Length: 370
Image 1: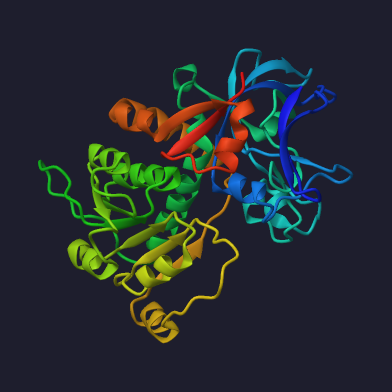
Image 2 (image 1 turned 180 degrees about the vertical axis):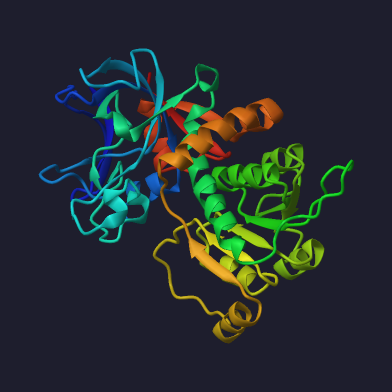
């Protein structure tokens, strides 16, 4: 069967003939892959910055943002049947009994670092025609989400990040005042750094939660990213016209920064402007670049004197996937045009090089398989 794979030793990426998988265990499910989203991680693997093939394999089949359709189930599978739509989780637990996170199904918080990830680390990914996996790593998707369900996996980043945000902010009085008989007013302000799919899905999640949301990105005010932002009731601010200092004055006390760029310089510049009791959430992973200069004294002083919190969030557990599926249903009802605009274009597998090595624009591009 066809698959898109990277060969790190040869520094090649190509469409290959990959052995088809079989259901060999009672709890396994076979999927016909329908779509796989392309993200910055895939492009970095295609640039050979990282990405580890399975042991004994010269190549790694890439792709981790997936949508598949069930074609076969093992004898013990109870949650799925042929025809169901499925989004599969990415990370698999480490084998160490002392890792309490992995033993409790929270491999997203693995202590040892010996986890594996489909399409990234030691396990083949989803840019292929068929995949077999255990049902415990799969999530059922309603049929009405077929056209946008490939967005579930990037949305899980925001879902996990926001779950932790609410947990963190239990440390202080943070509830918005409510006046009986009147609509709730904004009392929390969030800045989303970056207008890519992770950023815009994060903006939708924040807007749904009642934040006055600002998206700060490189593109001009006339861009499609600006259109999506304003259509969900958020405010788009272009870095071409507005500096970070001007952004902070416009927003007021910045309660939350949701970083979705992987750009270290602008992220730490914005951290200096985080408000009192604010939370800075990192979701991006910067490339291997030269060191940057930052005002470490100011950042440390603000963290202490303003009771600030900084944390990173990676991958996701089942709860985040279920939350993402639920919220994507809500987004498609509330903002149908905005959600549709997140997917820029679908490409056949044969055009993978244009996506992975070229400069395909837009928001989210997708490899169409089935």
